[in-house]
Length: 420
Image 1 (cartoon, helix red, strand yellow):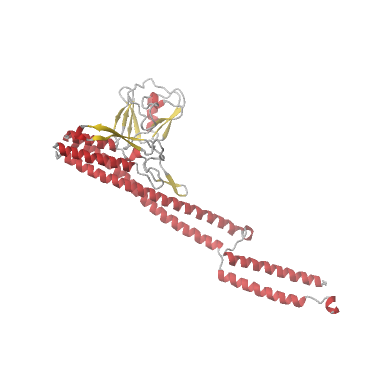
Image 2: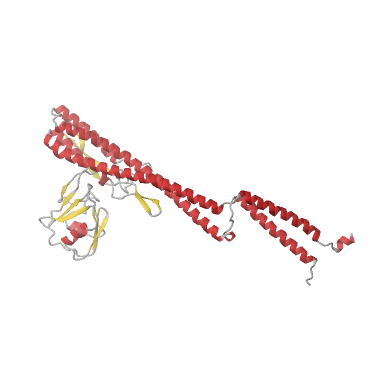
């Protein structure tokens, strides 16, 4: 038979009271925070899931921000391209009228040239449009510097024909081929910009080197880039091997050998070629395509290279000059054809931007739905049932009061009680 002492009774009572107080403190904390886990050891599995869900919610919220920014940039690009489209439509009207001899008098030719010059200025202004953060929409990664604040630089000269005065005679692209990417879902990226050397180009470009490369042979391992695509060259590679490597690199250009064993590059879609030797490489320089003494691409093409194809600005300048000369055959043939090719290129980019806008809208809906789903899972894992928790707290409170009452009666009288 076990002997039960007063000390044992007191210890048992204190143990029960402390345990109940601890349980009540836990319930009170749950009611105060609305969470069922205070520290990971309370429920390791639930704590792990909560961390995963919170991480996912943070990711999705960032994707939603990226999608919102992407939507804004695409809207800016679409607005600019729609303006270009309206200018092209007006230019086409002027071209058709000029082809039918409606500008026979000098005054009419002068008026047409004046309007085209205004449209040219507006085209350059649109090409240099900046987004809300001050970065050019069509400048690639170019953010604007004190020396070159805009990706497109217009060149003006005095033109006596048609009494045009100081008129535009050329435009240089000084941006780059960089494309802004935004992560719109885990591992899913969206291009939200278009380099200007792609948008504002009227036809395929053909670069014909005038250097005989029959004896060319690479002396070292090196590399060069076409439109940002790296092409490696091994020591001993000749012109035929380099042509084959270009044609199998996936770049939007086709290489071929000319009748004088010279290299010919032609784009497969309207844009201005971006050529650069990488590091200490000299392949493109030795083949006579680029000149390292000239500025950075795309304005580094060697002066000896024969260039076919033009930007939309060059095309409009050519149209203006032909209208002033009254050359109806060129206006109705070459100029109208080039204008239509440039218009098709603009429409292609408008369609591309529109497709991305539709994709962004679907991504936004999907991300919002995913955020709601994850928050619901987090609420179920982390949240408490308020009614049930209050009921449990009241039950613990009642048990605690009963324990105090029973403990008061179970404590035996001490010697001091008898001495009183």
